[in-house]
Image 1: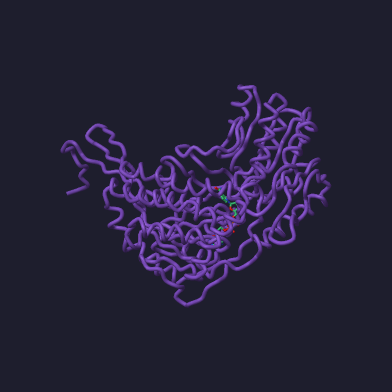
Image 2: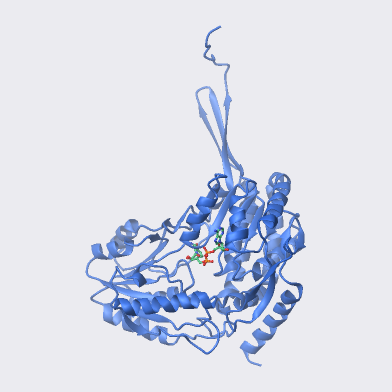
Length: 503
Ligand code: NAD
């Protein structure tokens, strides 16, 4: 038995169990079907076969879950931080114990390659550990003194919150939002992406196995327009942590307006990787290839625009082409696979349409550009050269394995090109000139810059974007800022004269 067949056999066993039970909602500690009894099917992008029936939650299910989260909130918020820490570490342990299962199921549900999903599953555990360790101090604040007054400023959990997640790397992203909310003392209603709901149900199981009190984490499956919208509009839900498309972010902002919802948005990107002629070309090319073709290019921080010094343009493009040719496109459970099938036929169509648009706009296809394989939603790693900044393939988020190359003549032009899009999530700069690296990265209108590196996430640092890429930051203490309110209590330190108004 080769590694692929072995992984497939293991994945099938896990999927059989999920298929047998069906994916239920988790509300107030109970696994229940949708109130109206409806369900939807989720298909594997590998072969478009149905792999689970999923409870189709709607406004009534969200209402029940929001009320469960509200009931569980006072006790969870009042729990000692050290107890919450211990519970969340137990949850992280359980993720580690079930990491293989999570990764295998994630691959079959999303089409992402096992080599990345194995790490992503473990990152889920790390996310919980990182925020668990901060739970005991989450409420800490400052004391300031002024004449006649001592101010005690501290934070407290905002209340029940909604978390809405997308279909790319869904398990890791869910833990990234849910772990800080729980550590802060909030209770959660999670609405996973309808296209990849399976690992959210594993997280729900894990939360029960770890002894999380009922109602602290609730999961309601459903679509954006019903369950998602209801969550953002629900009056008991104090805040929405959302990861997804920029357009959906705008819609959520409108939906949440009546209840004055606090929102945290991690949205789309069209991230520049800027390569100067003095860069370490070999490493830069490896990073460029990694950041566009790993995770199928379905990655918010993918470096989808290569902005390269014209003096090295041809050689650099040749290098990127050479390094990309060896990339294995195939079954996500094959350990050699880098690019698996895209999430669904609709998204595959969207990516292929962009390839046609690019050709129509006059960019030159230097690599790929076609469907790969006979079944499943595969697209070849694709490279466009001779692109101009006004082309749609140079401005819009394709969210697939498609890289667009634009040359520049000087640093000023490179900066203009890098900043001249609606998005501002991340940027990558390759140069050996340290002064330029400082100057350039400080002027990039993005939330995160990596200099001479691919995206390497360090949890204590802020993660998030500017412009259409988001509102707010995650990571470190920034996540707690979102999930907590700040209160100031001013104590008078002397019996000062109160102004008398008449009498
Ligand atoms: P999407 O916006 O279509 O859906 C995301 C989630 O929002 C899903 O759960 C969906 O059901 C829900 N939703 C849709 N409409 C809604 C509505 N009206 N009200 C409430 N919820 C609604 O995004 P997607 O296609 O699943 O994910 C891909 C996008 O996510 C890309 O744009 C990508 O860049 C972005 N993303 C961003 C980050 C980041 O950190 N910035 C990370 C991952 C993905």
